[in-house]
Amino acid sequence: MTRALAGPGELPYKAAGEAAAVDRLRQHLRSSLSEQLSQRIRSDEAAERPPMNMQQRQRLAEAILTDAAEAHARAELHNTADGGMLVTPDVEQRLIKQVLDEVFGLAGLEPLLADHDIENININGDRVFIRCADGTRRRLPPVVGSDTELVELIRDLAARSGVEERRFDRGSPIVNFQLPGGERVSAVMAVTTRPSVSIRRHRFSRVNLAQLRELGSIDLALESFLAAVVRAKRNVLVTGGTSIGKTTMLRGLASAIPCWERLVTIEDVFELGLDEDADLHPDVVPLQAREPNIEGQGGISMSDLVWQSLRMSPDRVIVGEVRGPEVIPLTNAMSMGNDGSMGTLHSSSSQGAFTKLAAYAVQGPERLPIEATNLLVASALHFVVHLDKPRDDASKRVVSSVREVVGAEGAQVISNECWRPGPDRRAVPAAPLRTDTVDLLVEAGYDPDLCDRSDGWWRP
Image (tube, rainbow, N blue to C red; front, side, top):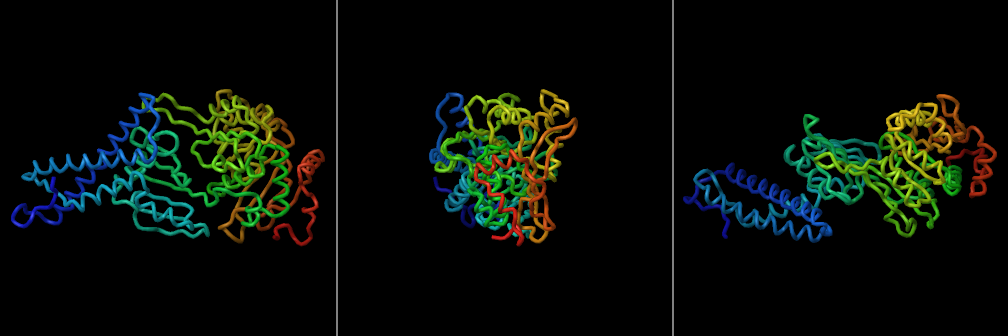
């Protein structure tokens, strides 16, 4: 079927009419693809057929869009008296490619994600703000033409993220997922005046402690200390504020885990990616929490996954972020033979981590009182490693404090700050470790003499 804008004298139109025709076709293509592709995915799941790979999805999408364009052209031909208008074949093919790029690409986000200096992308409707690795912030032009397009873009990206489809609509107005490049996306709609999207990029998807030292996050003594902590199978909690590098530090610590150990990672949204390095971590089972379906059924919480992980013969359990009742099963896992387990936690200080853990524990079904929670934490956790920004360079992230947990007394967890913030917030040696801890770490390769440096600790 020929689809061309009519010539002069055949169908009067103006530029506004052409734009409207293009917009109608674009909307029809998007809705047809979204509806039919989702229907195919659901029918495959219902029939227990294996899911389509990306190439199969793209071929199906191209067929759906071609048929949708034909159907739209027929409808426009029948409605010419009411303002219907056909677009040229070139325009039609361009629109089909744009919709494919939106669904299988990243549309207006593509150039931002291609710029590796950009660390954070925040979008409020048509307002786009970025934060770069050096700490600078800028406002950029819109990445989409309207709020509706932004919602559709996030919905399409969420629908094909991870191991299952994640909804984004008025019935499910909050969504979190991972982009193909590993970026973490958090989006909200309906509960805000305009849709809002936050994209967090991890610049270092694979990193070890030596590289963290080269980046200035730790010094030579801390590298020796932290590597020994991991090799000695001490349980560690990494704390710090938002976007401070907790996940990167967790990856660095995990690099010191012997390659023969079996790891189970538990996350709300896949970020750690330890299973992607088969040489360093060949035996990894990554688990991701699942949201309930539209009927409110089938949800699997991180707490459920932590309990399940204990049945999977792990040498270590690694929780991407502790932020709720999963603190109880995690501390149970740490104290039941899974030594060397790790996790991260949002906290403004290393000392404040214990209060946050107690607050989260209260949310669990066990409803443990604070005294019981503290006893559990003290018996399970060995070290808290806290991250901060140094005073002289806001673009860097450094280890600022390390606490050794030594026990609990009533409503308080007792700890020694063995590394405390120096004048520039970089950690320097402070309270001595317990003798048995020193012996254990030395056996695992720690060199205490590295702390006796009259010329300073944070030198190359």
